[in-house]
Image (cartoon, rainbow, N blue to C red; front, side):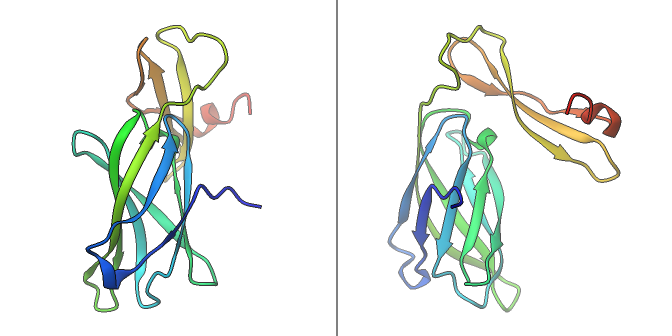
Length: 163
């Protein structure tokens, strides 16, 4: 069984109705399975908004049955609160296609059972870069909430030490 946090049935003929809400947890990843996506679209992605209007675009991957999976990284949920998400694609005429939008509720969630000291850094993801090397995505506890930190690059040899 795969991690699926929400099954979202899309309905492009009802864009005036929101899609199913997503209930994520702060600082943790989230996997959405999108069904009933029109067969004539490509390049599906989910846009996850933050409170200040900034957003993350997360590429979805198509399955042979026509469903799509979007694996939203934990770094997309730095703060608890109510936000929104949108589902976008490219139509058969290469024009942008609106698939739908919905509510995104990010609830607080602990990362450890012991109190966290301010300044604690939690690695979220290690992403490979073109030409070798890695980009580390981290969150840093400021004493009140997890804040995303600027990404730090590492060389390919540095990125494999200790693995």
